[in-house]
Image 1 (cartoon, one colour):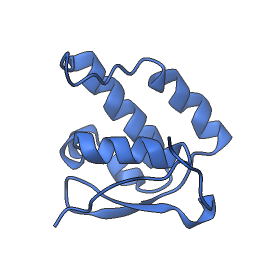
Image 2: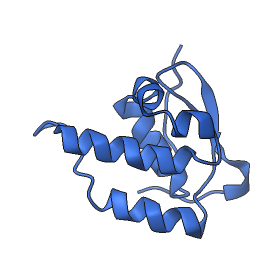
Image 3: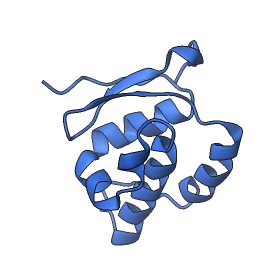
Image 4: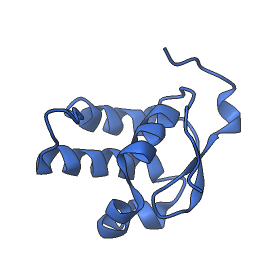
Length: 106
């Protein structure tokens, strides 16, 4: 179970592009849009991901990154290159205000 911590500190996540970004929980305004996408996410790696699942992941990540890295959030191709399943999960957790249990890329 995830445990909330001091949300104002943010959480640093190393993305697949090697860039470390500090992620903060979403504002209520962002959360409204985020939840519309997150409710459609079906990230079950045992059954495999469909193109629709991946599109939804990219859309959710874009919303989560709008205030952190707007250039990346608005460039779908660059965003797809900056995400992997590990950092996507960490981004979703941090966006919701939960602790991220992540081993940084070396």
